[in-house]
Structures are given as C-alpha cells and as structure tokens.
Image (cartoon, rainbow, N blue to C red; front, side, top):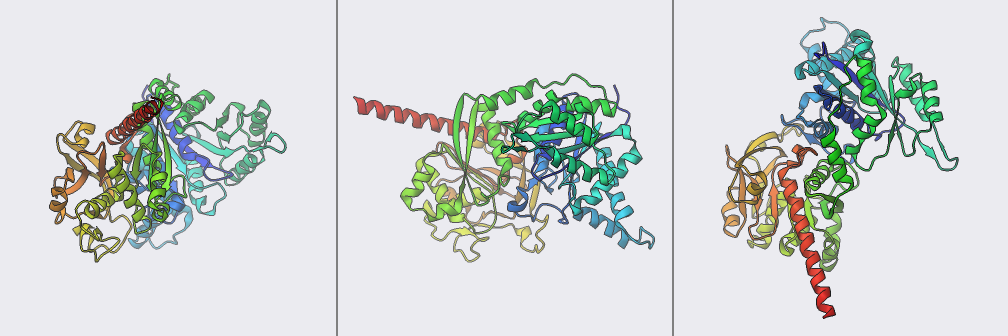
Length: 555
C-alpha cells in the first residue's frame, strides 16, 4: 500500500538524561524498517555549538562522522547501525545551526525589517528543517529525537516547534513518544511513578500530550503500575511500554516489538501493521547473548572516564564478534596510566589481553602510554589495531624503536622533532578555525593485493570515513618502508598513507580512517572482523601453550 504522505514520530525524554532516547528512537526505526517502511531520522541537539566537532568527549561522548563529512552527535551512529543506512549532516541539527540560519536570513533582509523572535522565526526554522529532511529522504516515516530533558530551558524552542507541527500537519500524521524513568526503591520495594507523572505534567504544560510513554525500568511493571501511569498521564494502558534493561542494545527492538510499540505507532499513524521481518535481527541477538567463544580486547586511549567516548569502536568490535561467534570483552586502559608503570607492571597490565586497539584522539596527553602499548603488541606478537591517531603513533613507535630515528614524533606534539614522521596536511597549514575544517568524511583508499587489508576487504578499492589533520610524512616514508613497514592502503589522488602493516607479525594494522563508523550489526566491518578473528587465534595459541606447559610439568 502506498503511504500518501510522511508520518512523523517525535521522541522526547524526561526525569533524567541518559535514558536511551536515541536507542528507543533507533529501535522503533528498526521495527518500522522491518515492516517495509522507508524511515529517516533527525536528532535535534539543544546546544549552541554549530556541530559536535569541537565538543569534548568527556561532556558529549564521541563525535560520529557521516559519509558527507558532518561531525555529529553519537546517536547518529546508533541510527545508522539500527536502520542499516547512511545518514548525513542534515540528520543532526543543533541550536547553533538553527540560530545561524535565522541570523543569516535577518542579515539578508528576508524578515523585511521585522523584529526577529524565538516565536515564530526560530520555531518556523525548526519546522522547516523537519519538512526539508523528510522530503529529501522520501521517507514514509520520519523519527525526530529532541535532545535534552523536558524542562530544560534550551529545549523549549524545539518542543514548541513540534507542538505546532502536530497542529499544522494533523494529529493523524504525528505521534508523540515520551521516554521516562520508573525507578525502583529498595527501601520500600516499590516502583515509583511520580517522576514520570511530573515529567509528563511538564510536557503537557507546554501543550504536548504524549501518545506513548516508554518506561525505562530495572524491574517489570506491574499491572497496577501500568494502570496508574495510564490514568495520571492520560494515555491508554497499552501505550505504557515497559523497557526493561537489556543485556545488549540490539535486544531493545525485540523488547519493544513484544511490548507492541510499532503496532501502536502504525495504528495511530494510519499505517498498515505489516508482519515484521526480524529473523536476521533475532539471530544477531542470539549470537551476542549466547556466544561460543570469548576474547579480551584492550582499548588504549585517554578518554576513559566516559562510557560513550569510543562507542562506535566498541560496537564495531562487538559486530566482529557476531561473525566470529565470540563475546568481545572490552577493557578500557588509560594510556596515562601506562606512562607511569614500570616495564614489569606494564607487561602484567597488558598480558591478559588477546588484542590491543589504540584509539583515536588529539593532543599530547597520554601519547607515550600509547607508544608503550604499541611496542608491547609489536614485540610480543599480540594482534594490534591502530585507529587514526593510534595508527600515527604506531608509525612513530616503529620509527623510534626499529628505524633508530631517536626523537621521532608528530609535529602535533613536537613541532621541533628531528624526525617529523607525522606532519600536518598541506591544506591544513593555513587553517585557523577548528570546527568542521579537518579532513572529514568519505574518501577512497586503494588496497595493495596480498596484504592483510586485502585479505579482509577482498577488493582493491574501498571508501572510508576520515577525521584528522595530520598524515604520515611521505618525505620520511622510504626509510620506514626500508626497515619493514608496509603501506597497504593509499589515497590515490594524493598518495596519502591510509593503511600500514607489519609483515611477519600475526596481525598488526593501522588505519588513518575510522572504519568503525561504517560497521553495522548486519554487516560487520571487514577490518574489525579480521582483528577479532586474529585475537581469537591468539587466544587459542596462548591456550595451547598453557596446556602444553601443564602437560610438560606433569611428565
């Protein structure tokens, strides 16, 4: 059946941040895609920042980069992974972008000298953005997530805009989904509904009545609790959706399908509730929850205080584990900690791991800890994966300890290094502004046949996403290659190094690009899959050595 026009779902959150609005929105998108609908998504971030590019991961989590080079909120990564689609800069809009557009219009005289106000000018810009993105995508359903929490001052223009949107578009074409928290108090042994009631009251005070309430909870909702929320929040009891904590985020769509969220959405929006095709998704979840093998990976970086700092890398490793039928146990290792350890303690810290991944980043903090982890992996034959800055420091480590280039460094850290094996890209040398000025987005990479990269990809040309200012210095590359460093991937237009390897090592590879951005549970990235498989082989060889040693001792 042909859908006559785009339907809209607006997802808001209350009580507390970090409840999983993004996962809820992405999960509903997955369920609608499984029913054959074309779905696009839009995240509104109530920050004055123009984009996420200059935001600290400690505050905002990782920056996710799209194919078209946009630096976006990490929820865009969840959207892409759940919907198995590519999104772009138009799918993440901040307060800064909205205000920038309004100010530009005012400067061009488009408001004819009128006073520019939040209402109607800012709210109109928000509504126009919703319609524009939906139209460009040709979507049957557009899911819009409003960042922040109901009651936040900075979110009010977005909430007012989606209130107006329903009035102008028709109630039959819009659905409000509110994600709330139903906490459990051990002292009383009760689930408490008051936080949700107050959150909905706040939402209703600005004119939005939720159609569905998704209740994040650690305990199952009793019938009495469901009825209480339905009564005091003025929703149907079936529209009180239980969202129990799940073992893996990829289980959430199945939880919400069982609760009937997609069925309710289809009925409220006048869409046929087709039978969903979730067989492949169920297989993925089974693999994640019931793996045959286990492998331990050390994630070495400096943003270890925040759970979401390297979320795309962690998810890509898990995707690799799906193919390998292995649970990937990721341990975050602070590179600054490694700088302080003696050699024996360093080896003791890294010895439990079957693979070492050195993370991307910027600046000088913790970099010598990364060098020590890389050297350990290289010398001990531990599978190693260096991502962006991690690849660059692998080149520095090789230059220092294999090529005898004492003091080798990146000019980002030491502008006066005698061996600038990593240097600023030529086009970056005149750049002053930091936001949106790096080498960003999708670029081609030519793969050398016979390399580890070729074994993983199975092709000589790939396209990957980038986010960096510095590159391997081609002027010093011959000396590195002479001592055994293999360049297995190159940006063909400019001869820039994209992938390096160490022949003779069980698995040692670094990429200038961020392969994790393109990994999906339905299509794990070839390099992450190969890395996990190498770590599994290493785990197996270590186990064989241990068994042999035990046997020898008994003999």
